[in-house]
Image (cartoon, rainbow, N blue to C red; front, side, top):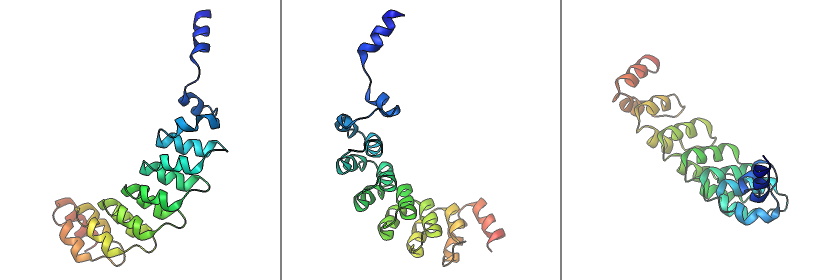
Length: 176
């Protein structure tokens, strides 16, 4: 047991250990900025953190760019938005949750995926229904759901839904 205790003392704490246990200091900033998640957490947890440096590292990943804008005081919304909008889910969330989001930019990112195009049109004030419809109506399931949105081209949605037996049946029964 003494040998094991002595070995543990000699090893030292890893960055991950310090991060998980709230032991980060400004001396850890360089290592924190090697990974987007670490940079995000460092900016949240270390008062003296260089927000711009951490933000640059966090914005290498759309998810952490979104979270940085959401949680870190002093975040550059436009920089985070640029990175977040490379992922449809992050673009959708950014438009919904970040004050000052550029709705058109977020819409462009969200409309790379049929499901997020539908959600964007349904949930985001100021969404361009026709633009979202173009993407959502490439998939029979999302065409069915999209038809329920005010302003949707129901005939176009019906045609796409008709390409799948299940969605065609649901469309006919529930929408008409």
